[in-house]
Image 1 (tube, rainbow over the protein chains, first blue to last red):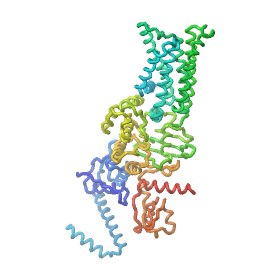
Image 2 (image 1 turned 90 degrees about the horizontal axis):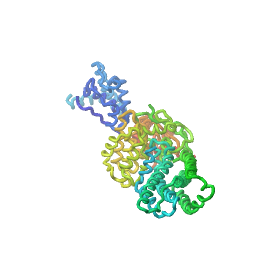
Image 3 (image 1 turned 90 degrees about the vertical axis):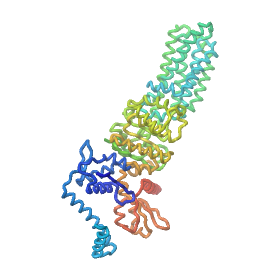
Image 4 (image 1 turned 120 degrees about the vertical axis):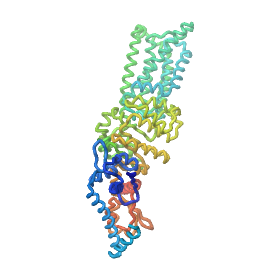
Length: 129
Length: 207
Length: 290
């Protein structure tokens, strides 16, 4: 397991707690945080990131609601065990969200659907994927 | 409570020592005052120590510090009154030692302490502190300084009267014990009344 | 557990009045109290410490009345005032020796640790310390009797940024224990940006808001754009607007609505605690003037 990276931006539109949720969720989905891994306490995390404990608490609540983590009273929070199917669904969901954003952007700027498709092909070819 | 008295005594040790030094010095300076010697020297000593303590506390705004600590305002006031008793006891002890020593070396100008003479001392300082402490709580140390000084000088001006009062029929008919007791009761009553007043003033104060 | 609760606090002076100040601080949090000079921050703290008598209202620490249980509660409260009220002619050691015995739970080891962390020389006289060192000494004393609530009145004014950051880091460390809480008043709003969980703003004796910092930063935003955008009552969605020859800058209390309305035509920035204070106080003062 690699180190958990949480990089927060003050200039982002997203609220801080949302940034934490997104980044931790990403780390879990990418396998950087393995199942059962013990997470830092909300207070320790708040102190290290130098943010409010209310913020980290909220991020953890959200992650718990989404089923990514679980908290045991007196012991802390852990990465929850997840079924492969749910994992796959979440991964799809994240990509879908990004694609929707790109499509919205295209519509606003008047880029056509065919042009978007062509761009998608080009990107894959470029990156050698 | 004890710690508060300790604070009074040790916050300014140097001046405490000066105060006792003054006491000693004046014992020799006023050595011919017989029964009134103890009272005079005690009054000077208590005056200087009390006045310095009050003005030091005011200068550094120690009141603000004390409200942060877990102590009752009543105890803060009480400690000042008890301080007077402590100073009385210490000076009395010094006096007794000195009078014994002076008798031993044949220097007879420091007479041995008698019960009424000691109580006279207590009465005098209780009177002084009984008046100045409430004034201090009401008007502050700076303003009270002048009253204190005035009282103090008045005590000096009136001290020649003491032998005359002592010589009157009413007083001289009393035994030493009775006279002493009378003075003691007077001293305690004054202190009690003054304490009640200071307590009420300090309790109501907005710091 | 509510560490500190102030209910409808009222105090009247000749030229100033605290009116119905109410707020709550839960355990494990840091609450910042901001406002312009003379707004009533120090008065509120004095009332909490029972240094002054309230004209009305209730103040509870851990559910207990601050007057009835005064000495019991003060054992659990560490206080740092804007001035260290100490005997200037005494050494740090002797001053500590005077103070420590009053506390039931004085922790000498903890005190020594703070002294060494702060690099304070016990033998020095208090009058020889710089303002920053005196503040650190006051903090060392306040934190050495296992206090559960730390109350500070403008602790960082007069301190350089390095020392301020040290102090803030100390606060962060302190509330790792969720039973401890911190309440401090300041007009250095950037400190609250860094460390506060909850913020209350007071102006002219009245509380203008009392919310978590998250709520405040999420709901508010600084909006900048061309003057032409200020049409159709646009100004009513702002707490305040500043216009100049090149455009406007405003604070909105409903960032989502503002984004929907102006979209790409305006620039949106996160509002700082200072922005909140400036705009809300200005609006309040304008309202008072009319």
